[in-house]
Image (cartoon, rainbow over all chains, first blue to last red):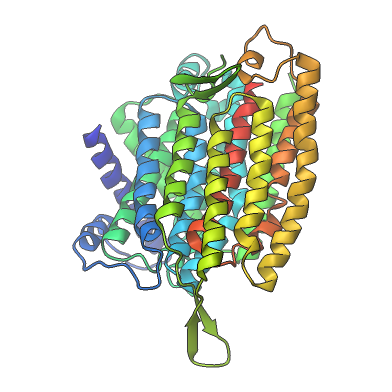
Length: 280
Length: 218
C-alpha cells in the first residue's frame, strides 16, 4: 500500500505538470517541464518552515495532515473497491480542508480563498447526481460492484453519459487554472494556500497529487470499468489533457458567476436524475 | 442491512437504540472527532484586517470570555455531529441535527460584529424553521412503519418509508445549513476564530453527507 501511495502521489503530480504544460502550449507559451510539480514538492520539503505569528498554530499544521489523511483514505477506498459514497464524502470534506487552510493563518487573502471555497458548495451537487445515477443503474455503491456491473453491461459512460459529464465537471472544478478555480485566483495571491509555505506547502502538494490521482482513477473505474494498469494510466493522461483544454480555453469566472454557473449545472443534473428516477 | 456505506464494522447498542460504524459513518465520525480535538487544543488566529484609506492593518483579538463560550459551543457542535454520524435511529438523527443548528448559532452569536450577528440571527430563523420538516419526517416514519430504527427500516422485509418523509428529512437538513439556505451562513464566516468557525461549515457538510446515506438506506 505504501508503494501505491507514493506512486499515486508522484503520478498525480506528474499529471498536474502535464496539465500546466498543455495549458501553456495552447496559450503559445513554452511552459514549465512536466515534472515541475514534483520538483515543487521536493523543493518545498527542504525550505525553512515556521508558523506565522497570527496563525492558529494547531489548526494551521493539523489541517495539512487532515488533507493528506483524507486523500490517502480515499486512495485506499478506491483500491479496495469500497463505497463510492466515501469518495463523495472525501471530495466534499476537501472543502473543509481548503476552508481550514484559508482561515487558520489570519491572512485576509487566505480567508477570502477559504470563504470562496465554502460559497461554491454547489460544485458538489453534480457528484451527488453521479453517485445517485450510478446507484440507480447498478443497485450498489460499492466500487467493486460497479466495476463488475460494467464487465457484464458495458461502460457506464455509454449508459449514463450525463452522469459521466457531471463527474467530469466535478473533476474540472478541482483542477488548477480552470474556470472554477476561484479559491486560488491571483487577485488573492494564492488564495487559501497563500500563507502555507515550506513543509506545509509540500504537504499540500502531496495532497493535490493524491487528489488528482484518486479523482481520475475513480472516474475511469466508475465510468469505463476495470482497465489494465498501463491503459488506466494512459486514460488518466488523456483525461488530464482534455481537462487542460477546457481550462486553457475557458477564462476563470468571477466568484459570483462561478457560483451561478455551478448552481445552474447542479439544477440541470438534479433534473436529470429526477427523470431517471421517474422513468422505468 | 443495505451496505450503502460499506459493510458495518461494529454495532454499539444503547438498549434498543443502536449506533453503527460502517466505513462511511466511521470516516465521518473520525473527522468530526479530529476537528473537535482541534477546537480543544487550538488558540484562535488573530485575523488581520486592512484599514481602508490608510497604509495600515490591524489584528482582531478574541477576548477570553468570548473564546470560552465559543469553544464550548464548538465542542458541543462536534459532539452533536459525532452523534449524528453514527446513530442508527431516525429520531436521534433529527435531534442531533437540530442541536447542530443551535450550536452553529451559538458559535458565532458571541461575536460583537453587526454583520455576523445579523447573519447568525437570520440563520437561526432558517434553522428553527428547518426543525419542522425534520421532526415531521421522523413522525411520519414512525407513524407509517412503526419503527425509527434505520437497521430495521433498511431490511427488505420492512415497510416502505414514504417518499414525503425522505423529502422532508432532506429539506430539514438543508434548513440546518446547506445550500440554498447557506447564504446567511456564509456571512457568519466573517467571524474570527478559525477553529470554531470551521465547525459551522464542517457540521453542515457532515450532516448533509449522513442524510444522503440515511435517505438511500430507508
